Image (tube, rainbow, N blue to C red):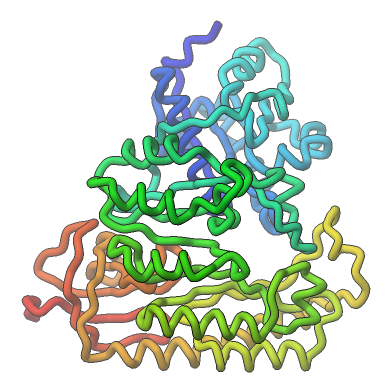
Length: 444
């Protein structure tokens, strides 16, 4: 048996915030064993790469990262572990191809990491994908700034969008029990902003309790004294009902912000995507949200160049954006993924055309965003300080309408600002994406 307490572990987490939570739980298992965790990969004797495999670009990044890490075997690195979505879905292809890696673990196999490493130190290459028990882990080693954290309330997905590999990788939607999530949130310490994530948070509880339980878990989380506010990501439009809207409106701890992945606006494309809803229903939902919660910020994502999408349908999506006037948007070129129904659809759009359409969508949204940002100039915004931006020589933070990493920032000058605390910032300008300003007590 290897004394792993004498080994230094390093971990690289790729992909989404849901993957980050998995990485933090894996780190807690490592720390519980008494091991040393380092953020300097060059020092690590055991490196873990927690991979994403959602898109071809994600898989390419994962493989490149593994190969880059393998170069450290000429220095301190003794064992290289690949875990997460890539081995979960593609271990058959990657185990023989990525000979640089010593251990392969899937998304539910973290409890097997030390058993697999013991065998690896005896000279084996280990494929332990599918061997774990997938037991819920509530402990975390937080890798975000101390004042915000993510809470993954479910895994997997039942929506079966025709372009998406998630159900093939993560399986069916699986809600985690309320009492375990509350315990996990309590263990995070004082959190200014708790960000609720899942592939679809609005479907939470149906599989476990036979009914939607998002409102109940929100009420229990916002009742915790260590949780200052809660932000919701990834709310599917067909599941946003009056009760949820009322809870967001009336619960002072819920940030008035929703991430609703519409993916497209045109009915024919939505049907091909196996997305519920229509253009008219989406616009009606946006109006209802704004009528009930006037200051609500709405973010969304859209796919350009889905198979058989015409230029007219792309133009219509641009028109939808101008009518919807969403606060923030992300646009992605359709990625043709094997083992998805959309892979076989006729009318695949050329790559150059897809990229051109993404560029066009971003240009439309920039106009909308610029108009919204201009409306804040001369006004005061409540901004949470995320830290210091040394390249700009000022503090950086976010207003309520911005989530970490995916939305714009507020850069501001102040004689003093504390990470995780709120500041009243007077906005003086913007660059079309970020805002700039200062606190009232700042003097040049």
